[in-house]
Length: 625
Image (cartoon, rainbow, N blue to C red; front, side):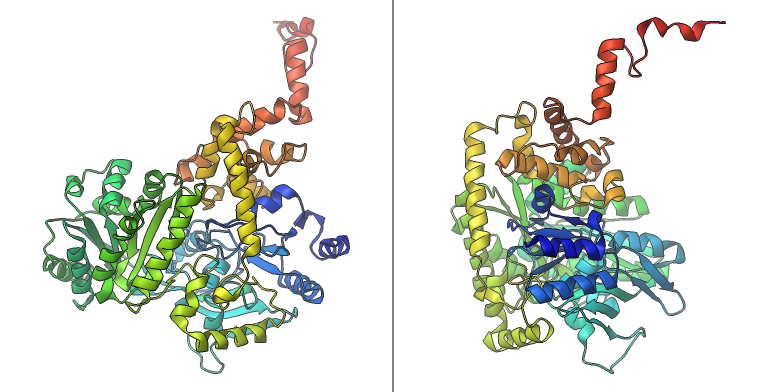
């Protein structure tokens, strides 16, 4: 990128909010999907005005722009595959106003979902969409993906709670769509147009959201089945019972068994189970909540579960949910290396057929991949998690074939959709035209041109490009990466004294960003390099031979105080602190540790104390005693 453009970006946001550092570029090259692309520059705006100026500059020079929240996308939606600007929205994270009388809250796009609900909780309200990444997912990213989560069966998706949006479009103009009222029909529904747009229409800078009162009472139960089709039948029965649970989840046998082992729960039923259905009902009248649970209970029993547990206390309810909450770390532990989460929906009455066919996919591919699944099945949403080693070309090729089977032969023929809440991104782009048809694709492309005539916003990712966009740069990046990984495997590392023992552990990190939550250094600097995820990705880049150890790494590595908080948050049990300590040791062995550290070490060696005081003065403190 031309240095003059970098200078103009610095003039807009300030030098500390513009980075062309190769390490920063690297850690922004991925999200949770198995794709990679390298930006030219990372920019952190702090206001709508700064976003507008950046986009005017990008529009003038035809520079691609990739808006990014926490980078938790599971579809490659934030991968900057054509270079350009990554617009990192970390600093636009303010809750602007809570209007309690009108049940709405106005926020900037970088606000974290759980932080918003923590803010609302003392008032007795909440924002219902709750993706599994809610502790890291930003509101802007949730709007872009139209995120949902486990409560969507009753409470709906993000789009159901967005009242108005402020956004900056391609020419730098600021638009405001929707109304700060609970209903409005005065415009085309452009608010919902932005929901699920995956950053392709504009950059959201503010959103006004509807909030609702929290329920006072909850009841939960789990049902065990010896046949997946019976579990599917139970789902249909509950859905047609007249009760809408606030959660209805499914787990398959491997997930159940490993989940019980992982959490230490006492659920011997899992040894026989092929699947389990977990339901929860909520409300503000205790007797009504209990009655609804009883109705769901009778509906589920018609499908002949061989066992069940009903939570009689809050403690028992929490224990039941532990099994579901453990699914992602369990799948990481089941996998040879990676978990790639798919995101389909089918009509609820087609769930039994879909589940049966999905579980046959590994056999059709000669066992080259494994699948475990969970799902928010109350609304037909199933998440088959593909468990593969992405460094193995044969397994990755089998995964791509599995996607063809999944969407072309199962989901779309059953009247389903290729994405329920994760978005299209890069991962599912080739299937969108099959689902939508060319007429709808053409309309979406015309709509895209209206908002973004030069195709600068997230070009080629997500809607509406389908299989028409060129992925050659992504493919070439992957080819180079695989070659580097092959070299690392052959040598069992890159010759680092301390880091090589952990090179495979750096690959386990799925870049989910859970470790950044409350990380002291990330909270202070708001650069992804200065976070646990960033430091692990730095170690990975060193072991891949894509970066070299240099003086520039000093601040990144030594700003970590190894407090271990990230270890508690990491679902995959990546040894983050061990990796960071190894990085520190590599730097220190090259005299690249901070000057203060070197001075302390020299003082201890020379004087026997960190202060550099002469040895003969050590007893002075006793004088006069």
